[in-house]
Image 1 (tube, rainbow, N blue to C red):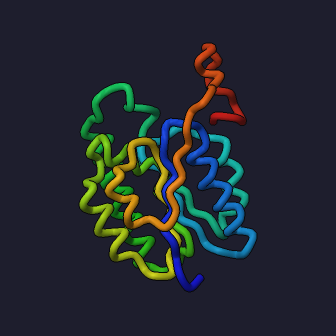
Image 2 (image 1 turned 135 degrees about the vertical axis):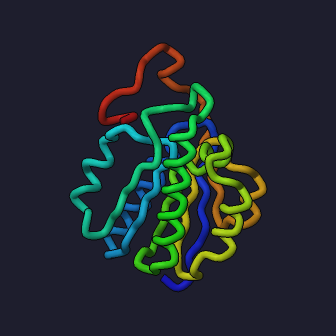
Length: 172
């Protein structure tokens, strides 16, 4: 790729990570190398098992525990996110990857696991050929100006509202 774009998938609706994973699949179909950093996630999601089959093209690392979102992040959450952030910067500077996905970076910024200023610097200094995707609720609108694509997932109706819990193969 010559001109790597910056894409943002945000909002309160379902589908942000799913959109990024669809892009991953498309990129792999063209032989592109993908690095996925999942912040604030630590569960064994179904997509991780599927992506292992593409391990010659895709690296997925999780930098989170089961779920701290309902509570204040603890030191361990911050340390995991910081470790992940350093790995993301190394991945970008290696120039091995055509696409880097910062999954749940919006949550990582919101809970101050990763400073907004560092994300702004990363976006500004990324290699020109690197495609960069940011996902998550609460992505600061300040980042929209740097993005080439911003999609907001809006919740119109959701079966969670009827008390239906997350289902294997659909939500995890």
